[in-house]
Image (spheres, rainbow, N blue to C red):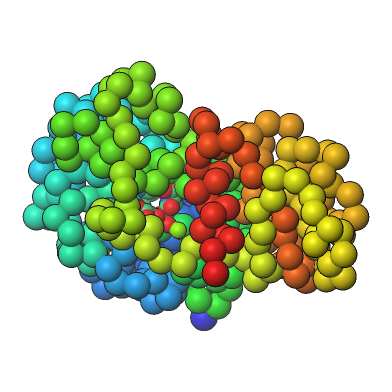
Length: 314
Ligand code: TXA
Ligand code: MG
């Protein structure tokens, strides 16, 4: 299959209209989209990614009014979050309407909905004229793509079209928030933090996805580059003696000695933005081990540590 690159939202939308799939930029990571109402098209996403069928997709909308078409009920907790954080890097889980095919939600009776802030993402969804079901545009288990070049390397020949645009502003996937109950429950941490959500509802909590798998995606292998990922707080002899090609990413300059490749970020937000892009680069130049600095799980730190722990798990 030929993979066409285009910077025209209209050209990309033509693929969606003819029942095909398209990778497109958003402010979090690149998504791989299909018409959410077209079962056959949605199945192509699972096939291209090698994604397990019980891992549901997020449905992306261009207008807030589309939320009530997809969801059976917009709960008071969802209303507050939508008002404050849509469009943006937040996804709300609500009870779904019949109109949404089961293949989109992995057979669940709930649906994940997000309205991207990215201008080109919204232009694209508008041009498609339908809500767009989309996971991140990477092979299942790999780090998410934060630039179209990452998508091209991973998906060339497997998808017919990539809508090219700017690199992702945040670099981490959206915060997934279960709004079906009285109080919001964070199923996947992201750029919208627990602290921010608590300002809307002080009872907001992290969900224990390990005990009761509410966000199916959380049980699969995730975010792994080819290189081994190790989390470190400081340096021991083990690292200094390692002869393998190694890399470092983190906040502390003083930790970053003796590596083939180093990325120092000034803030946790920058760390989040650089993380997946660094993983992609390390794989490109054959790094064997990536040492990632542990950071405090406050604010965006919770999302960074969530991705790092999964990337480091064996
Ligand atoms: O920023 C993002 O969220 C990106 C961009 C493209 O929008 N998308 C993304 O999609 O990260 P994906 O498929 O890689 O991750 C979606 C997560 C998964 O962990 C999935 O299990 C969860 O959302 N999810 C989707 N629908 C759900 C539902 N009905 N109930 C619980 N979790 C759900
Ligand atoms: Mg993903």
